[in-house]
Length: 605
Image (tube, rainbow, N blue to C red; front, side):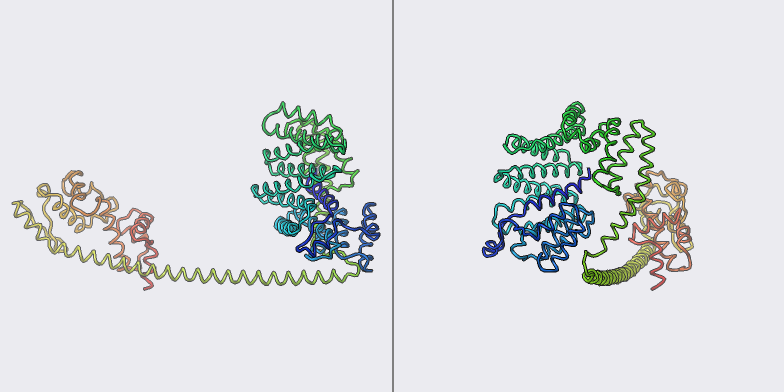
């Protein structure tokens, strides 16, 4: 339960235990760095206050001793950070660890406090979901340690690589995370190889456990199983050693069984899951209050709600004994599942009591959360208040600068966008002007071409005389001629097309919305096959509809040029289109612009 906080406290404990030597950037510095942190009587005073949970005294000692010059700034800030973590004031802890790890060239005697602060900072940033900051911090100190040549650097490196991998998992970068976890395992193995006390083995198993939990939280069951198997292998070696501790053996054996039960349950292997869970319940840890609560996730997934509800009954006492306050995270992780277990178990009264309990603690948890958020904006502890004032002023200045930069960037973006839109509008307008001019010229050219064709109408008469076809010349309002209906069947496809073209254009049949092949049949008495063949063979167009559509479009363009007061609806009706939408669709397909854009462009020219 409360995996993030547990992991952080474990990481801090590992970091404190790992204050050992690794060397420096060059041989001179490496020789100056001690193999382990040398603690003085002053350090003992501060550490002793922390071990007694007297954190106010810890902070006061750090202030007075550092002011007197008896405690270095690096150590004072590191001790303050650890105290603030224990007090639950994480943002103040971040500030302290940031200061303690800010100087990349600390005094040699404080080198491991500096490394410890950097490792703690990375883990805190991870816990607070400052993932980008956690990656930068972890990578910085990994590179710093890799510049040293000392085998005991592995103690810090495995912790930093684990933090890096956990952060990468949260950022949905599983491949990078697996590489980081493998690197953590590599450094753990180096630690184990030189371990004679069992401490490194226990640390390694804890790390395997935490990596497995990280994968469980990310729903990566197969990857979690890999690390559980590694933890199990280490446990086998540890049990066979002379320094094995029975409590640690029971603890890890229990968690391995519980995790395997969860894996089998997720894979639908209920019998195997039940067997592993039974093994878990026989362990000392499984029978403890924390063990009962830890098993609830498996029981809920296995729909064993009665057992989950019973195990959750240990929750309140467990929280009270450890002075854990109910915050929003606890409500979501513990109280809500407890409510659901009672509800699904049919314990309506208990579920109702839990609902009331959630309602009771929610307000206070929300207030604490708001205070915590507000506390993140405060600066770190300072006895005389000067550092607080400076930090606040710097924060205001940074905020002012940030706002100014943001406003400047937004203004530049708006200006750039406006320029872009204006240039696009100008370019579009010029493009439409050129396109409209081309369309107009094309229509005028086609009109002149049709006039030339009609001026050669006598060609049809001569063809008829050569074939001795009796024809009748009919005058039209345009002075054009057409062949009588009785003569159509004697013409070939090309000649027939010319006659049908004259009929359609002279009579303006194409302006009829319902004009089609049937209209020509009514006027000529020809079959639809004969008419279709005439347009397919005698025309350079594919079909009668395509020919009529082009006539209508040309007519519409002339209307818009000659009568600009007409709107698009009127133009479409006058040109023979069934609707303005049909007219617009055909116009855009033919010319690459809408009739509205064409009309507006022509009106502005």
